[in-house]
Amino acid sequence: MGERRAVSMADVARLANVSSQTVSRVANGETSVVESTRQTVLRAMEELGYRPNSAARALKRGAFRAIGVMTFTLSTTGNVRTLEGIVAAAAVHDYAVTLIPVNAPSQDAVRGAFTRAGELAVDAVVAIMETHLASDAPAPYPPGFKVVVADSDDAGDRHPVVDTDQAAGAASATDHLLDLGHRTVWHVAGPESSYAAQRRRDAWRARLVARGLQVPRVLHGDWTPESGYEIGLRLADEPSCTAVFAANDQMALGLLRAFHDRGLRVPEQVSVVGFDDVPEAASYIPPLTTVRQDFEQIGRLCVEQVLGQVRGTGPTTGTTLVPTQLVVRASSAAPGRTGARRPRRA
Image 1 (cartoon, rainbow, N blue to C red):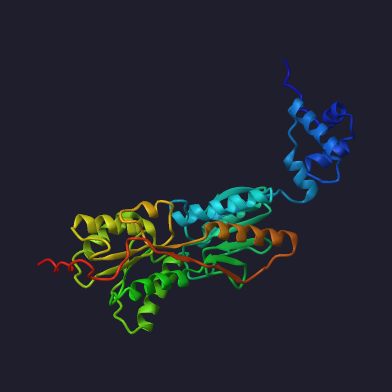
Image 2 (spheres, rainbow, N blue to C red; image 1 turned 60 degrees about the vertical axis):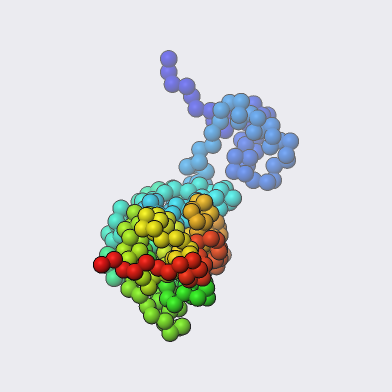
């Protein structure tokens, strides 16, 4: 037997007793078709198993109704939730999302990703550029692409940037602990290569300096609970450490475990504040005080701005910062509420 012939638009038109042009308008989602006729065409499509040729439709329209999303990794909470926000917002506009991995934080890898984007059926690109490139040169965003950059401060003069207000969020976490009466705040920062980690660290330091307080040495983790745990074991031996601001909730989780293992009570002897407000943060022991990021809003703005470029109505430069919210739970309290910190080990 020969291969079954693919169902054509003409087949649908014959079954529905309409013109091929009407079938085309229904397939393209045009609103000029009478509702009863549209339903007849849709039933005919379903009965025959007709699937519109999206590539041909895209060539005819000059658009694929797809957005490419570039990212270095999906192993971090911020990247995954930003991607979720982009996918949800794209669906509202009837756009698909194509993931374009960038295999290394380098100029060549970013250029290669844009080359792949040019070969894929995408109308525009959202680049989640949370990591500094190995070179000091700006990220190579080629001309001709519709691009919005998320989680970066490296492109606002060349492309629109959408990001959480990292500095305000970190400042609110630091001020919260200081306003409770802590003499200073220690900081567990993210990787030095991260834009977000850098901005949170700088804002933490700026708040301590502005209030004339001691700035403890920075301790860098890698976003994981394991790195938070290792740092927490060291901080447990610092008698002056009564408050810690962790640059994300995962490292804060590691801190909580380390303090528990060393017999330190949270928040009675040491307070902990995180950043992100992951869904599990309210179920930590104790529930975690943290800074909430609105990833849904970030995704929506990325999609709206990049589609605005596609339509010729959106911004082509500038930075949009999405506000954060401090969520106070049980992991932060005034210092020395119950007992004093243990002395440093000999």
